[in-house]
Image 1: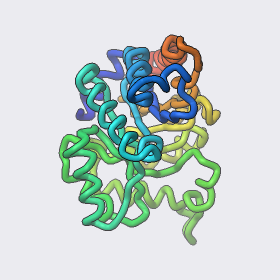
Image 2 (image 1 turned 90 degrees about the vertical axis):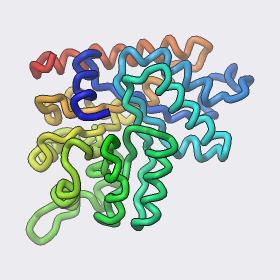
Image 3 (image 1 turned 90 degrees about the horizontal axis):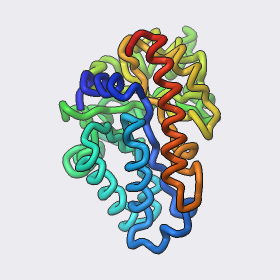
Length: 276
């Protein structure tokens, strides 16, 4: 999916919501444990309930890899189900990969040749040769970690050099030499608030993947105010607040309501910006 297709879908659905499929088998409704593949069964119902309100899904690989082969199979089935039933959805593998060149090449082959996702999250701190192998796929996206939502982000990402340039700014400036906004996005946590204005000074046109809205306490209003550009430029992820909105047999109905509530709020911000 290219940038224009993504933008058109945002306008069509009046939404820039990404539903995070952080599916923990210990948290899904108990009745699903009787299924042959409980994780996939849960994902399928969540997807069917929320697809009309979101433009992307982001399965986090850790939740699937923790279950061994069965979890990886559930991940692959989930991606295939989205592809076959909701082809307008942007699929992000939240894997945070990043290694020396030949290893990154294998990671890229896994996600883009085999799994056929649209994007993968990548850690930038081993430099250009660890990221370039992901960029040889012209229809795929690299989503580079820039300024994350966790407390520990302050340990390194906000450290300054002798000229006052913060590490996340150095990452933005250097990595923007490797690819354009047609192929690279950045992860910026919703809890960073006004810092989005600083991000936009360096990458005004790139899409930003924004986790941390919902259970982590990030403000969607602040994200939209400081981070939105003329083509929206945001994919805002919500995981637990949507997929675990309820644990009864009606969990999908509650997930749909939670997703719709976010979509309605997003629609207001898109209108305020004159995008729709």
